Image 1 (cartoon, rainbow, N blue to C red):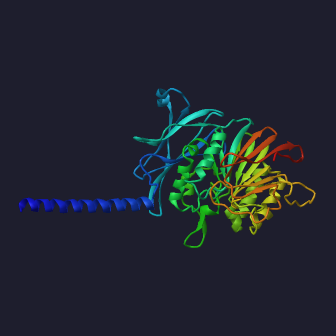
Image 2 (image 1 turned 180 degrees about the vertical axis):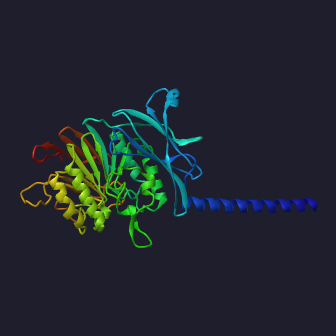
Image 3 (image 1 turned 45 degrees about the vertical axis):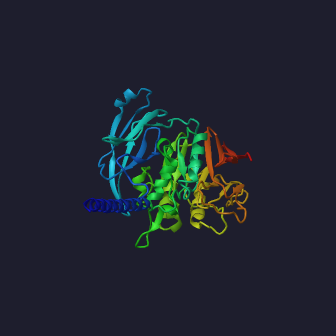
Length: 431
């Protein structure tokens, strides 16, 4: 009886343990589902960003658990000898604790300054016993040397599933790109931390080795409890972008000068609503274009000046900004939003019906959200739908070469622009 009793007690105890283990497992699974990308002691979401002059400085951001109260970035000219890493220059990070929808994390940022142009560096981030791997990054040249960059339309959906192959194919074709430009709607709901986790998972080390130039879309904005449309609270902690734009639009409206090109980001969500947010950008854009020492000018924003999809009309952009693009002969305008592809220049309406647009307008998408074209956009020389695409752009002196590829590596669209004195660029359509 005693033996039987002991056996019964043991069986009951085992049942309690199993039930407790099951409850714990269920709780852990629930937490993982609620926050599938939790911060830890190790740095994650490591992302390089452009500065106003990426030949002399670079910005890096990363995230950790809030128990990691400080962060450090180390950088040095790249070496093949690991023992020399002790000579890396250490910079203490600016650290910000962010509590967002119940998720607490520390976000760290450093701007590497006094760098040498055209030089390959190695860097890592972390603190204590928690460090990232060493990454390579090369500063831009201080002179107008040939260079290339990548343009991505809306990522938004499929960040972990379909988009990774696109960014990897772009990187494989152009590993020496100086920057990657994003035309907004980088995620579907900017307030959702797990979507940013998917984006950083999808881009992996590419985010950490090629500086990004992010422009926000409507999906990085949402109405707050007062009904005011505002930028996600995760944007500025995650990115360190130039603060040379209008007050109140920091790190969404800005510019960077790279090897003879002025790259400009506009906040088209603020333009969409009009008012002060739009007028500030009009005044600022006039100023930085009237005093622009660069040969080429490229502007990126989310909404389209001329839509690819029928029924969309962004009158504020077209009425207020196309005249500025015309006046200052902007060369390339990159956009997203329509989840289809369109590219055109010669059919763009002009005040003088015989004139030719100085700017080439291009709209693209890279994620898995697609719209079908009900009719061909009248302004476009090339259009398409139901395609994941990436664009590789090279500037060499007086020539700009643009190539758009499908996710499977097929050439979809191709053209060159050639500078001509006191005339619109010469378009060489290569399709």
